[in-house]
Image (cartoon, rainbow, N blue to C red):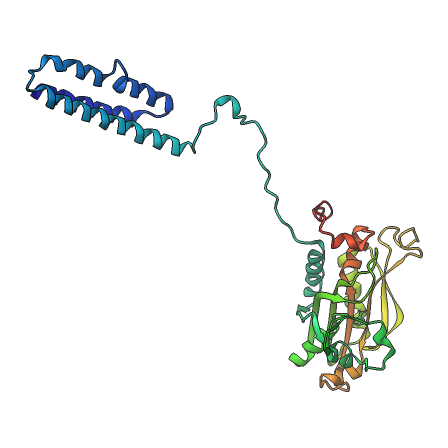
Amino acid sequence: MGDIKTSIEKVHAAAVDEFAAAGDESSLESVRVRYLGRKGRVRDLMGTLGTLSPEERPEAGRLINDLKSRIARLHDEKSAALGASAGGEKPSPETLDVTLPGTPVRLGRIHPIARAAREIVRIFAGMGFSAVYGPEVETVHNNFECLNMPLDHPSRDAFETFFVRDRSDVVLRSHTSPVQIRAMLASKPPLRIVVPGRTYRPDTVDATHSFMFDQIEGLAVGTDVTMADLKFCLNEFGKAYFGPEVTTRFRPHFFPFTEPSAEMDVSCIFCGGKGCRVCGNGWIEVLGCGMVHPNVLRAVNYDPEEYTGFAFGMGIERLSMIKHQINDLRLFFENDIRFLSQF
Ligand code: PHE
């Protein structure tokens, strides 16, 4: 009886080692057959029962059955462990083609308008301007009144916008110019700021119009700011954004919040100013600008006898369309990644 107990424990110890060593399903199966199979070691032990006395046999049989279930448990545990580390069912070698390309991960990117806004802000940052922001829902006071457009002013038509239901005092801003007012109220001169942001006008959508678009405003105020400063800064901007060969010209214009006012053109970046299909006469209009109107300075309690300033405003979509030869504004808003991924 002592002999058979020793044999049982030897077989168990060997099984523990062999099941632990089995590294895959097929070696596990051969270990199982070696111990639990019809000619396995557990069966061999059963065969030795006949050599025992009738009194010893039941106890020995019970021990061997017990061994059998202990080994079965070793097998099941190992089988589960192998299955888990393989992630369940293993594909057979024939169905796993390691040469197939992987699933591509698409990376997002910055929208071309946001990218252009950053580029323009960076150009002016190099000339000492800092970026500030204002709300898209603006007071009528800031969008019109403080900018020298009283209620009966004909210029209000050009800056018509969306009102908010049941409120006559707030609008969606129709330009970024009201942020001039906010910035001047928030600090004392001197001041140099640029303001990127969304603006709204009740325009019907077509290739060059939209009810929503983006502008960048600029404002510089100090004791000795002149139109020469305006021309220098905007000329530098034209070269930095469109290329060093670009020249600029200023045409007289009218804005209620600047006096004098001008529109700036850049020499055509496609024909060099000779005249072509894109520009017509060699010039492309890019922005509006002028010297800050004394009434605007008065509206923010800056003394117009002491301070002067210049201001400008440009449409980001328009600038980007010129630079990249994009012929339809709607492309920026349609979210077609075939278009957007080119930037
Ligand atoms: N706010 C004007 C527009 O939207 C642009 C502008 C800004 C003109 C500042 C002059 C000075 O058309």
